[in-house]
Image (cartoon, rainbow, N blue to C red; front, top):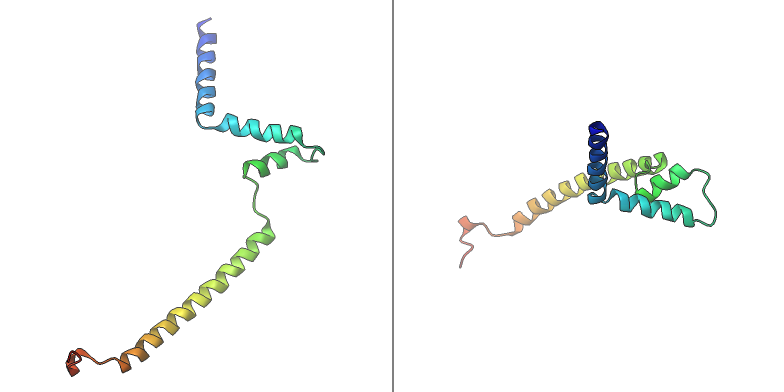
Length: 103
């Protein structure tokens, strides 16, 4: 009988842990949303994943984002170079401290 109580105690601790972490609320909300769906999805597990926010990203989306990242990195590098060049050119027109710029 003591083994049964220890097992129940562990279950209760685990249930409280899930409740405290918000897991039970999240699962309940997703299951209620699935229940309330007028037209049940073919893949209930995928529905749950999507509503929990754990579905894997679409490979086309991933590739598109990688391409965009690469393009933006190149643009960033070009802008850094342009910034350096403009700063260099600006220094040509600014009076230096040695020329007695403070009059």
